[in-house]
Image (cartoon, rainbow, N blue to C red; front, side, top):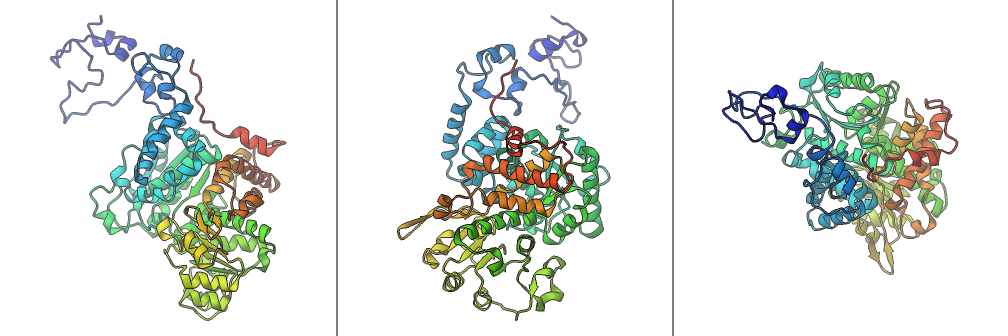
Length: 577
């Protein structure tokens, strides 16, 4: 045995059997004090070093490589796992079955969310296998609506870092902060400043749940490697007094920075991202407040590969639903009259993309023109100001009603009945998230329209039986668009996002809807086929990138759909040597 710390071998240190007599500690025999914790008092610093070897106990604690009870007999022998696991060996399929059974035992959605996040931290491949195989059941758990509650309580449930937090304290050191992240080959970043989380408002640093959730969908639905995804929260403070007074709040305890201070930190971040990861890094802006969202997209859209899901993703998925509706109802978008409740990021983004498709303006009263934010002005129309929505419906006589207000229950019985009196098949999109903020429920839309409404929502609703029909509400979920869009941009090596790519994504999604889907009330294809859908969207987006001269991966693949499918991450376990 070694009698001096300097002569203890690496194997002995790893196995914990090196006997050391340290005159400073007065401790001899047993496990060596490798980390110096026994010899240091609580107020003395110790070095948190470790020897990184993907075997034994460390392998079981590595979420990228851990397989739990699915390690084979051979792997257990070659990787020092004997005795660290029970003797049984099970398949990944049985692990999925067990985890799904366990998650279903929870009655509270937030508990299911926490169980899923815990699994992601323990066994990454099993997490994605479970999510991919049960996407329709688990998507509402890992993303909206449950992620909204998770963000509200993020300080209480936060346990381990899942992304990079950049605060005002890091000004001048953002590049250094990014380099602290262990993964170096990043392809997509989802970033938020937490000011407008879903329809819940300013959640500050607790908004990190959104980038984490979005990127898990980039992997599960779009096939982007987990190691290539980086969630980022820019913490510039919060104006939410409740959070500032919350002892469990994990962010800066100050009012939000604005103006030059805010702009300088964001610019340093955007510059550092490009410097660290290159020209082709995709940056998705998420849940920024209106005044910043449009400014950032305009400022960096010509210099970076940037995309705002609230503006562009929502617009693309809604346009896809409208194209589907027109395909099965007959007529064209140019024949429709649109009324928007809410003219923020989503509403104006939808209007702009519809305008690109049909060269038709939206509906904001131009008598308010001087008081409107700049991004709303192109959609203003000559009309007397109307205070009540039902009066606007009766005056304008829309065929399509789109809600992006973030205000729950604003599509009242009177509003829906007015739409139904004007249209044989009124198209009603209640898009605000989470469910509590939805302008109306699926049940209300179908009941108040006597089962005639063509309905879609932002958050999921259960199938509803009305008369002899069972309606399956369509969910205009951005998750249909952004994973495939991101895959298309990455696999083509695109350097900029063009509006024509968003149109291509919408048309590709609408093309996946069948008559059978529509007969059930669905404007979107079932989520169970989402990877196939994402591959088709990616192919169309990549094709547009090549057509516009924005792609850098040359020559282009002959079959873009097959190439997209081949690029997708697989959560199946690998065999270890």
